[in-house]
Length: 256
Ligand code: PGA
Image (cartoon, rainbow, N blue to C red):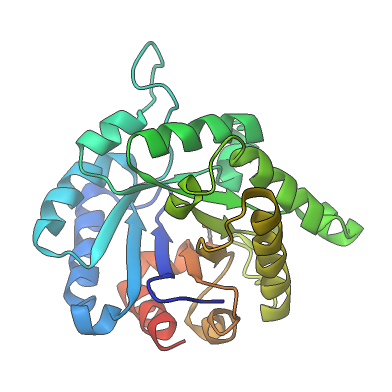
């Protein structure tokens, strides 16, 4: 069940916005996401890597918005051309990191085992990992989606203690709903969130972590999803690129 401090709305900007556009969007968000609007929601935005430092600096005076990276490497440093380490993010005052997003799994061959290494690196560097899991359409149609999704999460969190789970956010994102306009029904989201919570309780003895939903979530469909007892918020792609839509989602979650 939803608890105090367990409402999270995260915006995943993906590979969108030039530096100018990014700052303009951030300013729009910063103006509308006041203490009153945000209420009990923890707001996170994950801009492209190149915007992280300017945005952290810009937000210095606005404690209502936390900043996340969209990925990180599991080593602190080394010969890994093009990569960014969790340690670098920590030292750049970044708060969280999205890990195992389905686009990274699909286009960059990230495996569950690699995601597990990244989760450990993030925790070691005091970043909150937002761990993404979710089935594809074939698995949904085959009726194996619960087991497929739990298997991803079980491996991603392997070796962690019950206590370490307190610093994790899980994002359930059915792949067939990401960027497709096709959203999971509130019942489908609730079924998965409730199942993952039960499995987390059995395996780790901890089911108190936030589980947020992602996949074509927008102001027109968010109320019913956020109303589900095991849905703690959303990981928002497309609708996070519009300050009005994202602000409306924050308000809806706060009122849920
Ligand atoms: P979407 O993306 O809201 O555009 O479907 C969600 C995500 O990929 O995190």
